[in-house]
Amino acid sequence: MPHIKTVAIPLFQDQTSEFGIKEELTDQVIDEFTRDNTLRITDRRSADSLLEGTIIRVDDRAGAFTSAEEVENIQIFITVKVKYQDLKKRKTIWEEEITQWGTFDPAEGPESRQNGIEEAVEKIASEILNKSVSGW
Image (cartoon, rainbow, N blue to C red; front, side, top):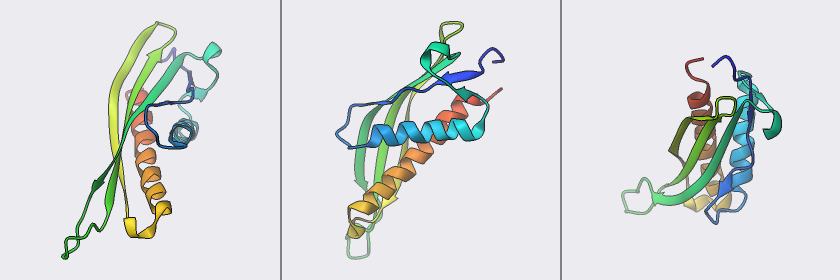
């Protein structure tokens, strides 16, 4: 879409009680777009396109078990509803729910869970970028 050269990415909304996740995900998405450099990040007033997202779920689920049937790792699934709009033509380019996951070892404490969240957030940000700029 040659008429789209800029994108606005406001702070994602958060329907979960997961502290700090909306800032982390928004920052990661902005970083992905900045590194890719297909679209320039700008404010909403001057943007050709708008990318909005809402974190709707964060779920921890047992992943692998040891032979003694103890939880070896936990998968953390994050689901985000994302909408990418063409502001010039006033139409939605794509809109969908994206779910990705990361893993962590519960024996390693709360920092380990944060690593799992970061892994999932990186995957989501990468998928959002790919869906937004593919086919250009």
